[in-house]
Length: 98
Image 1 (cartoon, rainbow, N blue to C red):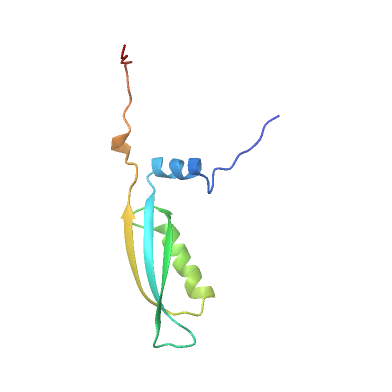
Image 2 (image 1 turned 120 degrees about the vertical axis):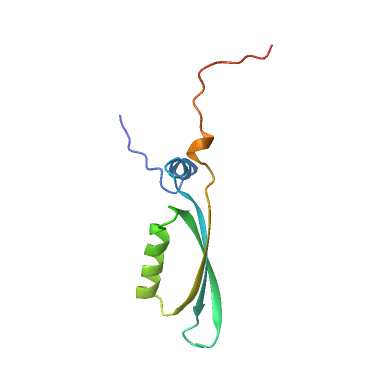
């Protein structure tokens, strides 16, 4: 019996994304309230995304502009690569203690 296991949304899936070059991305989105246009409200978005193009964030912002009434005022982005390819090294030996 075989099963296809999806890794999306799991810790293993997030780790696989990090190995593929994705990094944790946080965006602070300021938008105008539709009922009180003079009032700004904050929304924080966070996901794994590719720097510097940020395709997931751009997709979310496109969705926002099409489906949500609150007009975007500003977007501030922070990105941190949790695992870099340089941090993973091949070990060609075994070291024993005791």
